[in-house]
Length: 304
Image 1 (cartoon, rainbow, N blue to C red):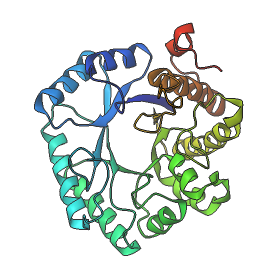
Image 2 (tube, helix red, strand yellow):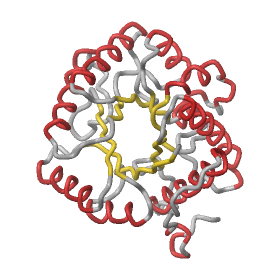
Image 3 (cartoon, helix red, strand yellow):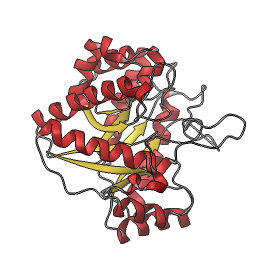
């Protein structure tokens, strides 16, 4: 099995051509992000992907609107969420970009179990109608926000594909989630994709995953990721996909008062990518294509 790394478009800046070129130069095989609603921006994304010979993982967020489109409205119903999912799938269908699969931040955390099961069941059927593979993200504000809610849903929908971002589970549970073995053992065999961000009991993103203070958090996430890789290999996956997803928007910690972010975001995600490539090679006994590790240059050093 091989490991394919994708660069997140979250916090990438305004120059998509530079973003794509940097990703390709650094050894990432593709980009992960939403399809821009502006036709000019969508065309620019398609051109940047094609000209750099990159793959794409598409994203769809359901139930939001306006400037905070990624946050589900409290009043949005199951039907509302399915309508936005259908619109998102139709937009990807009309785009010249052919995503490998769709990662979905779908549903609402405040729903009952039956509402959540209804949504995910209908969402899977909708994606199948479009001929798309869809994977649902473990994310706060969504039904998969916690180990026990996800466990209950998966027990009723065993075909559900999961995008594992366990950093959210750590902050929701206010602990590292090794204690949630039933959920891990049930969910990991259904993980399709990994978003590699290191969370800790008081937040979804540590200030620096290489810092000694957070070593136990990094090692915990690596234990879970390694279990996912071994499960995927046993399921016959030829490729495991992973997106280092340290992000801005309140996630990236900054200096008090001055508000300067530390460290630089792209360097941080490159460091995460290189670290997990090394981890994957060691854990799975494979040799991957050499990685262009620009994150360790003096100007972008992440080591404290």
